[in-house]
Length: 509
Image (cartoon, rainbow, N blue to C red; front, side, top):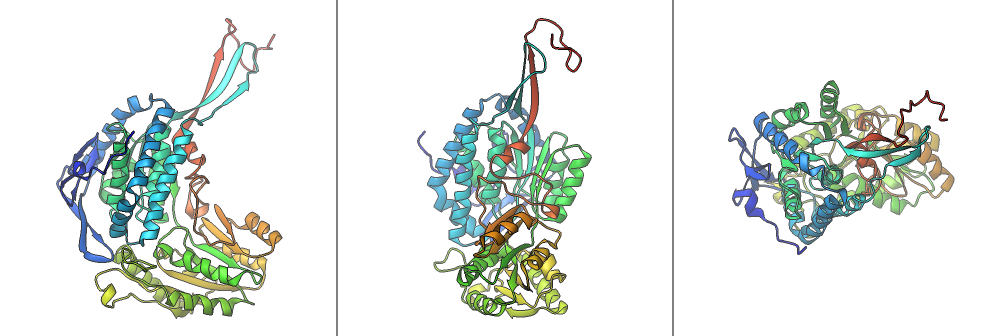
């Protein structure tokens, strides 16, 4: 199939006015309300105006998805996979355009938004392969002339709530496995980054996805997200966001007996042992702490330093952080973009105050950037605290900004105890040349992800992604584990004995 160009005009009434997608049709919110999406690096730059959806729009989208599900579930999985493969090809062709639009609406630098699109490409190709690999099991029956097997079945209509920090990659983690399994979807993107999800779904449509199989409702959590979780026509919910909101989503879904996948916060620790390659560790810490402006659930927000190397490491990290070029992610040479909105800046400011009051030492940063290059955006300086104790709030609570806490330890055992001493459990890492110590860390660190000689960020699409405790509820995104949430198992028995056989009672004569 020859790739087509993006069809922006099909989803807009004017250049910057975008619409909900319901049943294959682009339409405004039923109530007519809208909200504006602006560039966090330059708030005078209007990215677009989007519908502020309510329960009526959610209801229409769910009904459209239920209707589309009737035929989509009967489409052979390899045929569904072919659409995903074409989607990956189209995304590759549109990568630069989509990355630039993402930088405008989310703020992170172009290298990172290109990576965001690339992750969607990788997920498309990976899940396309699963269209011929959704294996069940065959097993011997305890009775004669009887065949036993298990097969995967689609769940139905999936309600999806996506975050703003990876506005194309994370929706692809949700949509692509759900689609290849035969489900229909209604997705509510984050209000800070609606355009990237629209571009992803537009690409699916251009690749041949039938109308109504994926529907988009734009808007805010209470007005659009909550009705999506509560809707009786939604069979399961996939949520990525804060632990606080995730708790409410999980409680609501549980009360309605809906399967619910929660991927939430983190307070991730990077352990640097005294035998580590310090140059490599500093480089990893800089990327882990300040990549995506610290706005990752996997961000390296705690760095645990052996006392023998703590002083040298701190000096080198501070020096490197102060050299980071902060600015508009579209500009050449910029290494760190803005925070996504004013609320996130205020959160960073609040934790700076808390950390100081608790007795931590501010080594660098700690303030909003307000110079000429930063006057119209939500820029915050890369911030490092030393002298942090494990029970301080800055060491326990997620900031979701460019703020990192340095803690010291005397032994490997103490480092593991500190790393595990939080309410989250997403990502961990250790820098060491001792292979035995590395394997003990892999065994003992209580998290869904552990890296050796790398920071806490950098997950790949073919491995499980998720965590424990307040980070998640046991489900995983990525890899074949995603199929476990988007399918339900059915056991099938075929009795060809031509007589009544009773399991657990017949003797099998």
